[in-house]
Amino acid sequence: MTTLGCSPWGATLDELVDASIRAERAGAATVWSTELHRDPFVALGAIARETDRVGVGTGIALAFARAPLATALAALDLDDLSGGRAVLGLGSGVKRLVEDRYDRPFDRPLTRMRETIEAIRLVVERADRGEPIVYEGETVTLKLRGYERPHRPARRRIPIVLAAVGPQMTELAGEVADGWISHELMSPEYLSEVIAPRLEKGLANSGRSRGSLTLIASGPAAISADRSAALRAAAPTVAFYASVRTYRPFFEFHGFGEVADTVSERFRSGDTKGMVDAVPDELVAAITPSGTPDDLGARVESFAPLVDSMKLRPPTYYLPESEIRSWQDALLGAFPTL
View 1 (cartoon, rainbow, N blue to C red):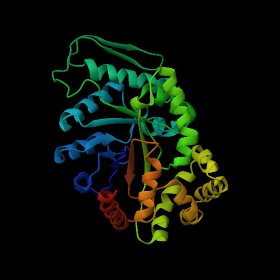
View 2: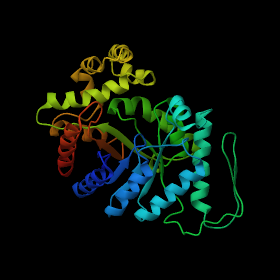
View 3: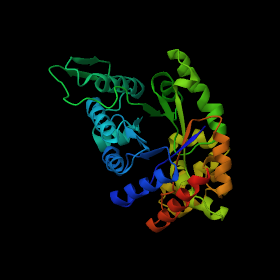
């Protein structure tokens, strides 16, 4: 059975927590917080205090923005605070973001991601035992001697799900992570034809079966009886990602490579409205779960044979707060019917 998760929105932390409480009551299995404008661990800590059942996941935290020890301790505290409900979602981000905004290295991202995950797992498993924790990789070094965390962990293994788009990082997710989480835009066709074979290759490399890997598809879901209005609300999110060169192969796969080129040109000229106008409804419908309630139900059904969970969120890009709230209300209202 495919579970449903939610990445809620809030202009304030209080509003975010309230939306998360509503998501839990609506049946969400996991609430996710993204590292973009908030620290996801702080936000999820606030959510964990006010919820009882729902999982709390970083969806995603930037793996290279913190030292592995810092990430591991944050995950341990979140798992403690939530009573063992934490999920550590990690992603690499992009070179410019990590180096310019966080002043952290981005060299050899595949090796760095593998070693970051291995180092985090060592800390989570052993931090309270008082024994040396030494990890010496090619890009990550960790030396904990004379260190003992005086707090028993809620669990000695916190699930780590890896966000991956490119072929090598996706293969790595299948090889070393407990799960894979998709980009914000995804279709069943792309998942089955492009992503799944890469995950299977990674699983084969580690001798694991598909059952050992949790697959999570994501998407902005604008839901309305007015299908056109819903698709236009999600179009700005599609336009934002279409402007990023890294994602052009994804748009090309769906037959919209030229649309991505047009959006990129208008982005460079500062024409935000033109970017959004260049995105046709057909593209939005192909790569997001937006539309009518029936459209959302059909998209959930189409993903069901392929994934274990879906992470849904209201559209937010280039929209005023009042509209985001309305779309979030509509999405949460649809959860019980799914």
